[in-house]
Amino acid sequence: MHILGQKQRLLPRTAERKNTNVTAASFVIAGASGTVGRQIVPALLAAGARLMLVGRDRQRLRELFPQCDCTDYAGLAEASRGFDTLVFLATINNDQVASEELFHSVNVDLALATRKQAQLAGIRKFIYFSSTHALDDANASAYARSKRAAATALRQDAGMNTQVIYLPAVVGEMTSGRLGALNVLPRPLASLALSALQSLKPTVHISLIVDALLSLPSGELKAEDPLIVSNGQRNNAVFAFVKRSLDLACAVAIVVLLGWAMVIVWIAVQLQSPGPGIFAQTRVGREGREFTCYKFRTMYVSAPNVATHEAPAASVTPLGTFLRRTKLDELPQVFNIFANQMSLVGPRPCLPSQTALIAERQDRGVLTIKPGITGMAQVNDIDMSDPVRLARWDQRYLKLRSLLLDLKLIIQTGLGKGRSDKIRQTAG
Image (cartoon, rainbow, N blue to C red; front, side, top):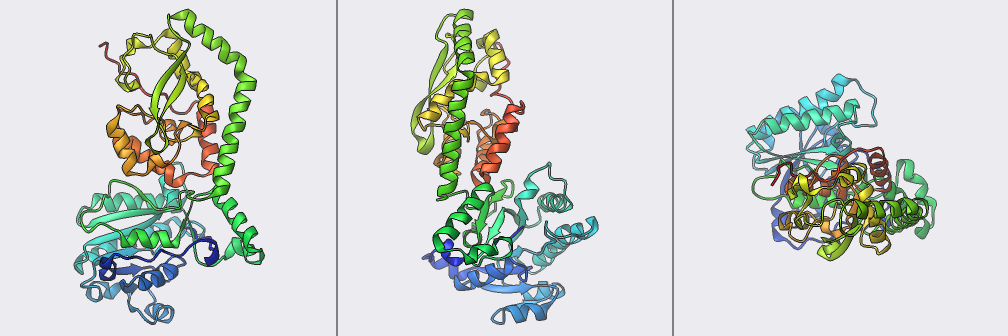
């Protein structure tokens, strides 16, 4: 996890909590002396939580948090009896220079040993904090590999209720480090500069991390679902403005540069099989609102009006196969971009009849953003045949979206990564 730092006046504190159960929350915090822990502990105390702090240097913890009970790892099992949740923050971070063995020793071995001590203490839940860097299998750093190894090991041992929480860059209460220059700027400029930086990379405010801990379910945790906590570009006017501007600029460029090709494809579709060149179909967009989505027709007009993965392979025309493989069938959706119904990047829009997928997306907040011509799930070869898996990846995009991620997904799509929704291969 990497902390950026943030002036209090630039982002709100954790909202006041009215849930009376919050005061009953009890946490054992391992790694409380770190940059994230030093901000989480005061916030949890302010929310009425009961805390036990664990670290290698108990005296250091007492100096930092004189109001808290503290122990070392050797005394964890005895001192933590009666607590409900252990939060593991101890880590060798991604900006530290360390050997492969040291990364594994702290990020994996110490986590597993601490969980065993938590089990001996009768603690019911174990929360392991990781970084979104570890979600990228292409990230081969020692840090990312150790975090992935820890998550795998924790999942394989089902002896304790465990959840891995993934965080992007953490924004704290005071501006520090590389963002220290924001302290000298006037408030409007500092706020604008921070929003611009946050639009490039996903971030999470300390208050959201605390909220996630306080809202953990009392029952079983969903360990199979990567739990990503982030700001998700909510209320970031810079991100919204730049994303919309880029959408419009690209749509105009496509019409100007490829308009002639779109006309040729439109004519070719009609010449190869009877029917219109453009296929118009009702899809579900932002906030569940329906809109008409445009594509070049790739199937015969007799094809059933169902999701692509439910359509038989015989429904696709020979030209349609080429258009789908090259993704040229998506070009008419630039007019959906002009109408502000779609974006270049976002979850693929589904049919109103795909109620299972709509429900999964609704539960995960995916319907709060516009659908896209391409998206994270699409470039990872995940289509609509598995609604739960698709919605999970859509939610991952929602949590991690940024201008740089959008650019990466556009480039990957242009290079041919990912495929269109799979056609059912049976003849019927």
